[in-house]
Length: 199
Image (tube, rainbow, N blue to C red; front, side, top):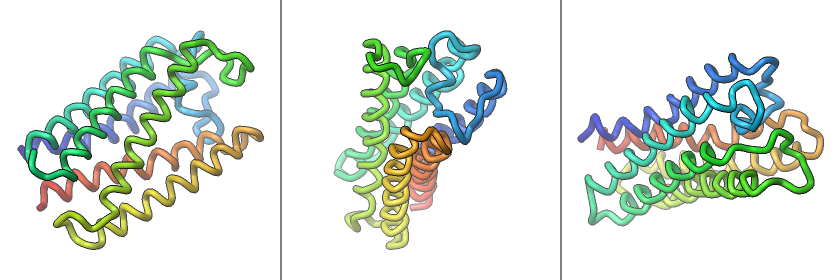
């Protein structure tokens, strides 16, 4: 079962490697300035390949991780809720892959696909944020430092979200803030996975 729990480590690592690979196939892509969704936006060099390298496999690993959490301890409410949230996270990745962004992300009237993509992105973010916040409360048998780490991770993510929303107007460091915003939560999932195995 411990080997299966490592799926929580695989998902974020897959995302890191996958984004790096696809970005290399996107002429002029700038990680600091451009958001991740642009890699799969319509009519881009990486439109077709991005979901298959990133969204779909990453979604699978998150859903698998969530299912493992549900399987290992159905009587533990915190693990149960976390498992559900991880599965929601995974399904959100699939939806964002099935409904890519518009070619121009800043159009006044976005397509239905863009709207669905954005809503799935919100669900994706908040599913991880809520999971992180749940573990910041000491209702588990993991060390106290993990609760503090969870709280700090959530705080950093929210601050990065505020900075990201500001950057939408200036388009300066937008990609960087998005990566911090989601990245700290992705790393948190990896740490959670390791802690569950050690415990």
